[in-house]
Length: 127
Image (cartoon, rainbow, N blue to C red; front, side, top):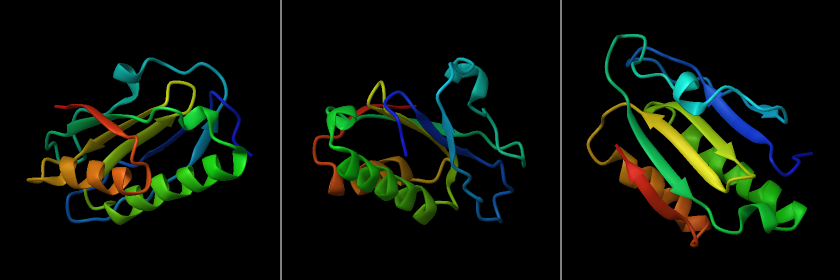
């Protein structure tokens, strides 16, 4: 069961030739600031790019629809596991933060995939 305010994140630094292993954590306690948790480089020393997506109304969804949305976001991260180094879904803030390897167009592909099942998604930034 996911509670409002829970964060779900997956982080496995991997070499660019390996696929990421996604691990899901449900964290109800305050965590370190995001800037301290997000990796800046992958294990090969290559830089990572960031994507931030606002998901208005996510925390207000009925439990069964919230679970479905979470599963779909996890599926997107798994599908793009060759590029995703870190992903965090903060339900309390309705915010998805993803760090990816700098592959041309990958940030927009991930955003489009999320927006495909959550049309209310808004791209806040991609750095």
